[in-house]
Image (cartoon, rainbow, N blue to C red; front, top):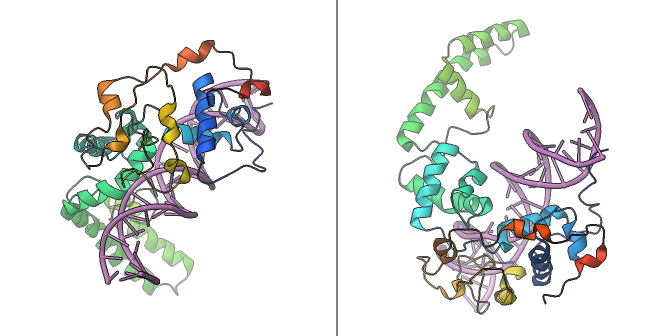
Length: 282
DNA sequence: AAAAAATACAACCGCGTTCAG
DNA sequence: ACTGAACGCGGTTGTATTTTT
């Protein structure tokens, strides 16, 4: 048979993570390393599905995450990489240590897109907007022109309409045809514009850009007490300006992940032994 | 000061790919 | 070779916070 289901989805908690849940997950990963996510919730004593645990860890709890706004340099890199890779956020994130695909995606959608448009650059194609608009107009005008006779013959028998359709197809070159396809949703991309755990918040007031909402992020001061192996906490929480001063030093000063997951390989992980889910870090 | 609108981002959802059995 | 669960990714949503009216 295939693999076992990751969770039964019955009685599982959804929504924002609490500080207590974060504690449990961090405690478990620090002790056991990242193993099969299906087993994590049970072993860590969490009423979450493995997928949710993985997301929480990779996007928020991982100690090697940078927090705060992307620096100008990072932003330029994102723009450059996006022009080459498109919306492949995980690929882009792999070039930016300490940044997650989710973070980059959010930043792109909320900041960079607007900036580029203001600069007259189309965020999808990275071409000047004027050129993109011009390129879009031509095939559309041609389509409209060719659709006129189609509309006029709507009452005609189906055969006649099919003839018109094929005439329309023949009249467009490949680029125009593709542009129409794009505009009409045949392809995914339309042509026309239409603090990690604030690692260390010495108190719960974090900079507005990073501290939103969830109770989990508002109550993470416990995290500074954690003893991540070879990890030096940076005092992000005290950084009050927007220039990322003091933010991101972890990566810049330690160009490496904070621990080698392989270090955990020697640890015994008794996946079927519930007793192994109790640890004593806290 | 209150309400409405805009913003930011954590978390979820669904899909394609990978891989264990 | 086949089946189906796990995984990873990108798109979308929900909601707390901030800004504007």
